[in-house]
Image (cartoon, rainbow, N blue to C red; front, side, top):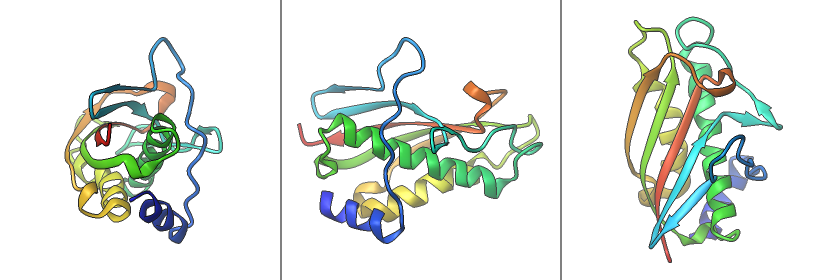
Length: 156
């Protein structure tokens, strides 16, 4: 599957960044058996948070979807680092948990998460179809608009 994922990334003009180092006292990932747990990923691009602010006030849905897509790209970058550079070890994306910094009256977190879900499903096919949560938050680290973590089944 690695060649497929890598070729689909290339077809979309996406180059995975170097996986971000932890910004505090935590690990970027842990592996237990055949399950890879990835810490939350921010919408980082070129070494900085690309989409900041509160959705529904500072950020519209389209920009927030782009933030979620960037989080998904960073999820794949972390997965690649965790798996020794071999995305082919991914069996299935089990779950994405999305946290959206949004106004209390904003109720379209699910639409924001489509930015990540659509990209993951497009890149991984059936293995990218996943369970998910989309939760509104008062604020996120570094004023990011979106943060997403992942649980992934892998070849051990």
